[in-house]
Length: 140
Image (cartoon, rainbow, N blue to C red; front, side, top):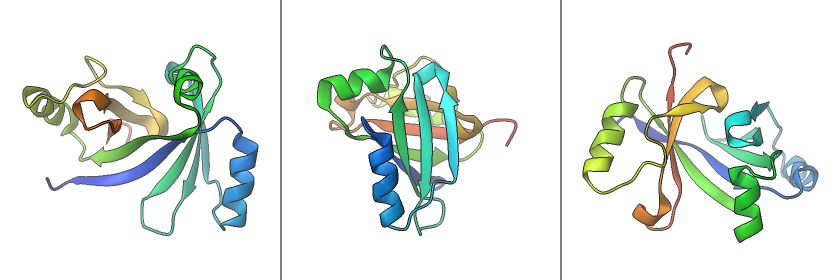
């Protein structure tokens, strides 16, 4: 499908300062940090030398939040792959995915980092991979 591209790889971290140090040694610099209270997480973005692609470190700030629960259950590591969808296409794409057996986690998109509208596809319907779909909101 045209208009969809890899945006970032989300990594759940238990020790963000250690990952900061690793990425610094690898020559990657953090360019954006943002709290996402609805997910109980602080996000930290490290762009890669590929246009528009980044690592996103997911630092849990709420012990009851989804990232804290993920780390408790599975340990730190890759949490999701994020795809950017063209503005105005997310709702239609989610409907089409639902009709074809791919289950969104939320009934409606929610606010995410970078003022994006987001939803995830349940990993039980995507071969075990949590996929985030994100779309610029009206402010973009």
